[in-house]
Image (cartoon, rainbow, N blue to C red; front, side, top):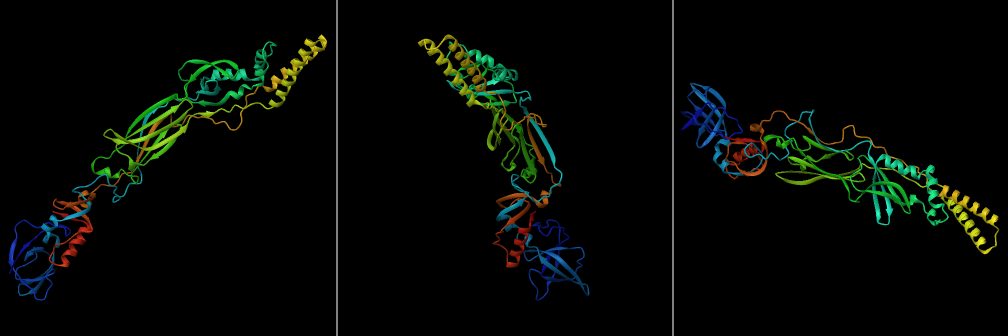
Length: 458
């Protein structure tokens, strides 16, 4: 019988078969041998051949022996991949890795990473924040709740009016005998709901006098709508997208993203949820409250991947003075004295001198009562401070990207994870190979072993 011989270099895990010139040599199959690992006897030298074809199968020559009298013995091993090449290429398998139809969006942990990343930073719009800031006073009124924006000088003017050195002005308002005494029993501080310092200037609007209940403060400030927004911004960021075969590195192991928003801090964004770009949208209301979201998308379609909130405003506690009870008691005593004096004079039951004395005492009690009942301004509890961030007042996107050594897709492929017919040349790694071809179980097992460990269609 005759066999074809080649000097042919190929990978063992490849379906490649020789297509060049061959030598056809007469051989004799040795008795009592395994067909998958046959031994042949021939009279031609075999030092320059390493591959053969016999009886419909391809074989690697794995042993050569001179047995005397110009006779040679060769030991062979069947090349299962080459022998069943047509059946393998016609089969459909579930491919886990390949360079034929890779899916770059799949996470790949095959390659190690360098321990030092590349850091990319992109700054967005600057929030118009300052350490000077302004104040927001929230009061009760007949119209409900009012919000006033005050500059630092306006806020100082209002506090000065409420402080002790200005109490004579309030006394002048209510000491006139022609005015009712009842409003003096009402504390103007009761009409202040809250006060905040915010790190931005007073917003535009119409100026209105601040009235604390019955008392006109004489200080005018810009009145805010309850829904006033200081800022409403959408800021786009383009992520550092790896091109082509490195897109598979867009996962938390290789790529980390964080967003810094002044007043809210820095928070991570899960890169596995992100596409090619981010949009940071936020709103700041008149009280310095910040709410926002981070959306990611491509092609004009965006989905929210994170939400955040924070507070730029700081509370300014305004508390009532102590001693209100004694002050009200003195006011009541003074009013009672004045009323008694008035009744006595009207009925003729009290001398003018006595009435004058009682009236003077009553007036002094009223004055003392007002002095005690008008609130002082003091702090109660801790007062926060506001410091501009050392990172500035800009929104910031930071990316930490770990790179990998040089890739070898032709040798190890990329993640594929799909069913493919193995008709195209390239590298394949198969999960649970389906092999329903091959002459015997030995050949099937060899094909399965190669498919699972990775092989080449050539």
